[in-house]
Image 1 (spheres, rainbow, N blue to C red):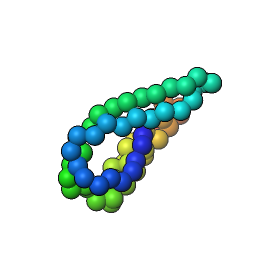
Image 2 (image 1 turned 60 degrees about the horizontal axis):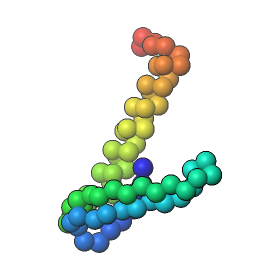
Image 3 (image 1 turned 180 degrees about the vertical axis):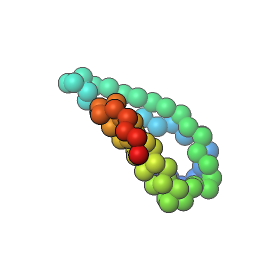
Image 4 (image 1 turned 135 degrees about the horizontal axis):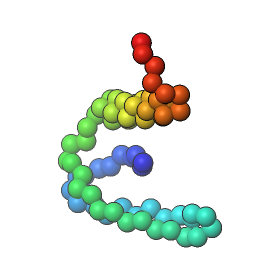
Length: 68
């Protein structure tokens, strides 16, 4: 996941480059960004919720279900 800020919506192309296991890698993706960005609060809430769900599912896989 990559997060950041931008000015000006519309179609953009992003390139992420670096090293993976000693080999150069490059990933390019195009995205249509909205003119008006969502508020940071919405992003944080969505990110927190998805991470919490992932954590809880992992706990169930590791320790089994418990009845409360």
